[in-house]
Image 1 (tube, rainbow, N blue to C red):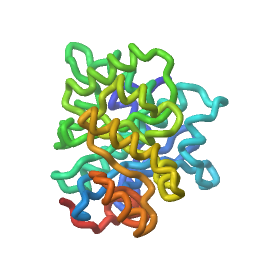
Image 2 (image 1 turned 90 degrees about the vertical axis):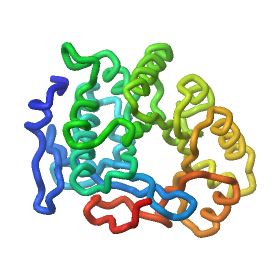
Image 3 (image 1 turned 30 degrees about the vertical axis):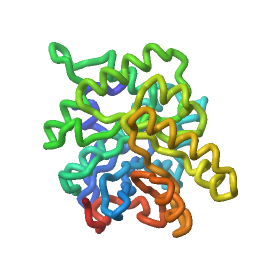
Image 4 (image 1 turned 135 degrees about the horizontal axis):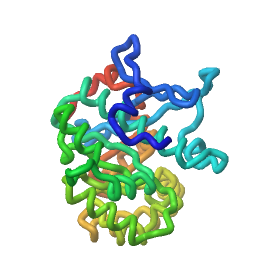
Length: 266
């Protein structure tokens, strides 16, 4: 069964001893962690919500491998992806300041589902409805479209345009990896381009063209730029010199439950 209503989602949620929301589904435990994103003044402008998946033995499973595992059903993948957003949003509403962005990952399949499945008699999605009920606004949420391929470009474009029309920001995640390509950026015209760490490493090794091209592409689309995977001071300084807008990586802040984050927001 594909989970679609608040009541259905609620059956898989619980509050942990730390006061955070978790989810149990199909033998898996789902946990929220949040990694800060900084501006050039080193103030936090937002948090990316990241999923931690544990199996029945409490062994971690990499989410990217989980979602790309072709032995899993699309129902299982979508339900776990949606439940992750539910706990992310609830935990963000509990522990965050209200003047920063929540960055939420979204599969192309889920983006299309938001577009085609609205609450009856209302031109809104369950995600938008719940965000508002929790005291947040779509303008405070950036949906990061993951690098997964999706064959029907027209359907994906229609979904992204609809999501934007409801006030959400759109980011292309991991640009330079898999389907997060120039074609996708030109088609979807995101508000934010998140440059994959692989381009940073290429730049560090002397191959500067890929990241320069990404910056040019973003500027042509009037998109802000996040560089991912900043782990050393030199990488951070190099990216500042390139005029990058926002920075994310272990050097600046590690993924942690949001109540453990003690950084100062912008």
